[in-house]
Amino acid sequence: MTNSTRIALPANAAEAMVRHIEATYPYEACGAIFGTGDGLGEPWQVTSVEPAPNEHADDQHSRYLVSPAFQAEAERRALAAGLDVIGWYHSHPDEPARPSEYDRAHAWVGYAYLVHSVQSGRATDVNAFTLDAPGGTFGPVAIDALHSPEA
Image 1 (cartoon, rainbow, N blue to C red):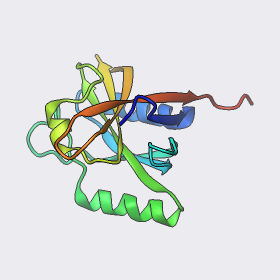
Image 2: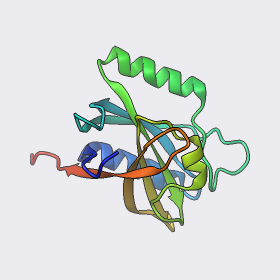
Image 3: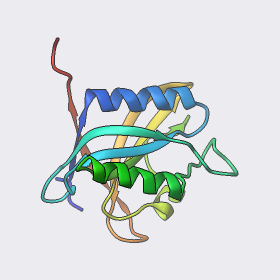
């Protein structure tokens, strides 16, 4: 992936993720990102996000798992709405907003991954990444923060 890979993140979706990850602290939160684009020729455009239950059986403080059933249901809802699941978000409680080796080993090519740092229960930072090849490395994705229209 190139450094020109981008994701447009509207304020309402960013706020929904922050509410979810702060409410889930000190455990890792996770969820689906819905939208359009492929992250290559057409930047990803986030339309909404949906929290997922963290199904990791061993250590939800430093690991997350989105169940296959949730993944399939998210894909079905996206298709019905004329959208795609363009990525996944999760939090790193009291850790930096960068993917771990566990994240890399479980990621899929073609998706945006937003990683949020949560320090003492407060969201402090978010970064986006995409995997360059199966088993490869994460490359950065620029986040274009979109502001809500003024009322």
